[in-house]
Image (cartoon, rainbow, N blue to C red; front, side, top):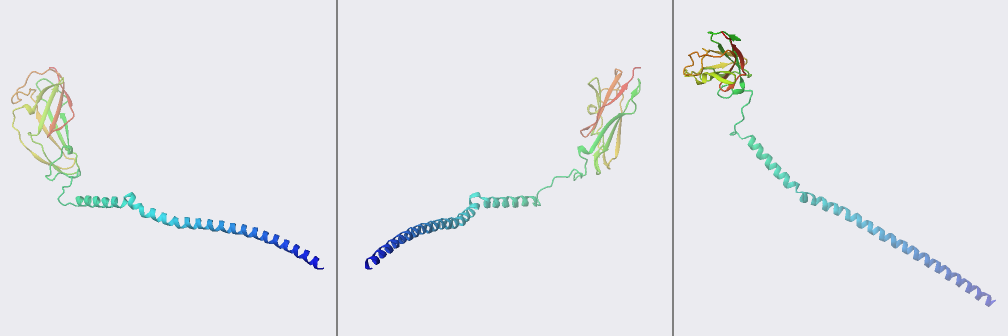
Length: 232
């Protein structure tokens, strides 16, 4: 009886040792798993903590690195200088093309000058009537000098200048005229078939054919106008 109890005690001890070993292995596995979880959680917490800090550092470094704030300051300063220049009462504004100059005179571009003759052809012994038309093409009234001082009647034949009032020794007079928009004025000159010598009053022998009249006023020149001197 006593020996049987000892065998049972040995069997029980053996089983207990096996159970203890299994439990030890299980505990080692569990311990390793827990350690792995702890290490992984620590890394995630470190990444989570470092993320906002780095983002904050980037956000703080942004304006300094890009230099946007100094650029804005420069821009605001230049803008204020431009506004001061624009509001400077001493600066002279450019004259508008829709209004006459302060002295009320016509600009060169305000006037249109046209040439014509009293007839398209003239027989021997007839003095051609030369006509200058001046029109105010602006939208406002202005003053133009229509006197002989600013006029020129020019006649050419075959590309050569035959006659010009600018070369004649005649009286030069000023005649200021206030022209309303669209107003047309005329100036006439009776050409005695002369050249430009002296007073331009002595007729000279001229070849028959086509002649070309061009008129100008204060530097504004017309298109050429053709007329004929017929053979007698």
